[in-house]
Amino acid sequence: MRFKVELKFLGGLESYLEDKSKNYVTLEIDSKEFNFENLIAFIRDNIIQKKFVFSDYDTVSGEEKLCKVLVDNKEFSNYNLKDKAKIKPGIIVLVNEYDWEILGTYSYQIKNDDKICFLSTLHGEFDSLSFSCFVFILFSSKLK
View 1 (tube, rainbow, N blue to C red):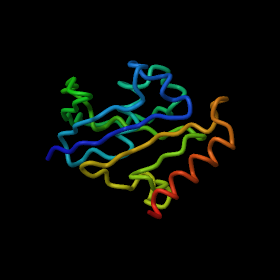
View 2 (cartoon, helix red, strand yellow):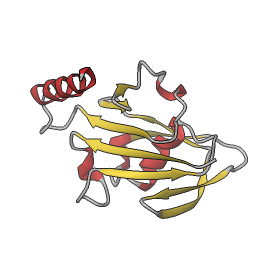
View 3 (cartoon, rainbow, N blue to C red):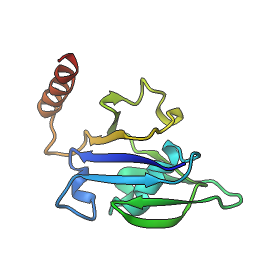
């Protein structure tokens, strides 16, 4: 089963992307077992340049389980589903504009066409006023 996910990086995280000309990445994942911990590990290993900023390491031992992942049409065919990671504190995760904490955090099952946003609250350029404006815009768009 293949599904597509759009990832967006804000609050300074976009400066750690390989392609700094944009703040989003599209993934196509060819595995129904791919979960949020796999997503965090995949981003850490293949998308974010400074890995320590984004997540902690948590690789599970055991038999490899491989799947294919496309990042903006570039193929990573041997992604190991045993690689898992937890996101660092200070990064807000929104799934389809909802805080992932109300969706179950790591237990949330990633779905086709999900839009997942990673927002750092620790970056100097993204202060509390900017965050308040971001939240206001986000929720006022839901009311329309």
